[in-house]
Image (cartoon, rainbow, N blue to C red; front, side):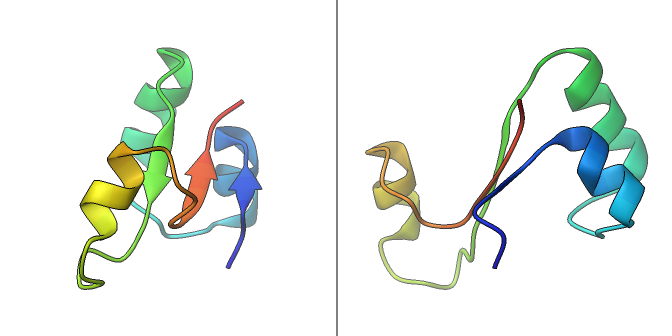
Length: 59
């Protein structure tokens, strides 16, 4: 798992987190993305509380 990465690095590396157009739109609008497994019980709550639950795309 990658703890933190920039939008540009996601695009350069070809990491298929989500559609490249969506990544570009987030990058252009300075919107961070938190990628985590929704199947893990309590993951949404932990994410909302600011705990590290996945990969942060931004910066």
